[in-house]
Image (cartoon, helix red, strand yellow):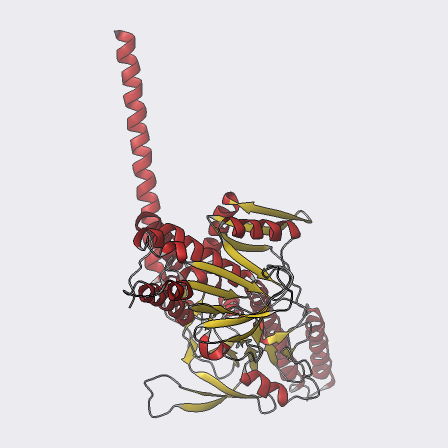
Length: 520
């Protein structure tokens, strides 16, 4: 009896200790979370604009521009951000918004959320850049929003320009793409795709609809076998399996997903093993993959395809009209009109039709004190968020070095102005100038070097693929464990605690309650 009581007593003490430790952990973690959240909502005072400082104008608020703003020391410069949207969009999770897995605002980060915590005030202007004059070093932009004030267009000068306007969707001049296809580039594109597909489902459920029309309405065609197209196909499959089968049991068996890619395989940036794994996973998920297949036209009710070797096996090169309710276009980028206009002003230096030519320091070829980063450039690097982010971080470091150089040059000019007087004063001035020039020589500007951190893609069915460089070798992985790594990697990449919390809570919400199938 005594032994039993002693054992129960030890067990009780263990439970009490465990309870206290759990309570302390919850209080500390909860308190820390609350402190960090409150701190992020309470920006302090900032230094005002300084007319003696040089001004950096940043065009854009995408990956490159946001990465630059995050690392830039604004004590050295006046900074102005001009962008048609006042937020940063976490584009890798855009397909999740398109099917309702994530709330749209969960992947939006207001630009002022970042700039208000900088040492010096950063002016954020929501406007569309209309033209850049690289000779006069000016930017002209206009307010294209619904509500406009008395002044809706203006021109400002810059000392340094960071050109990060991104690119627009490439349609290759294919008839009907702009009019009838949906894109997957901006947040409104994802919302539009969700509304369109739900509209097709409800129309298919309308009484008296023929079987042929139901099959057409419930067929979604995704054009582009890159990460965006593959991830969107996987997300739509999850939407079908986890939600639509429950709420539309009579229609779910008719829903079809077709992925079209003009190249011989999807995901060409991944290893051959992962490409095969993705294609086999899609076959198991009954997602049709048509590689080597070109789109020749898009109408309101169909897409014309020129079949390749993976078509229907009845004749390579044959053109067919495939009935469908939704066509999503995720097939590449092209330069924006403002970029084309800028390149036209520098015909001798800007000869690459793919985009803006830059040097090893990301300087815009042919323009003084202008830098270009991200998808708007034509370089040896792929137009990915990873590249743009590293370019922005590099420019932040480069501007720090330029500030040091400019400060030393200003001191040299001041010393040279003190050169009048006796021989002893002249000798002292010369000695000081020599010291300053030695300091100037030590300010080295290193060229940009991209470091590939790997590639990730979600392929549906709680599976993801990863190509990661580890210890000098590429590590390829796919499956559920990689999917968990994919989620953790994206959570850590999000720019703020707010976004991480919102995305994580959205994932939990969908796990518990499913996706919302109501249509606005």
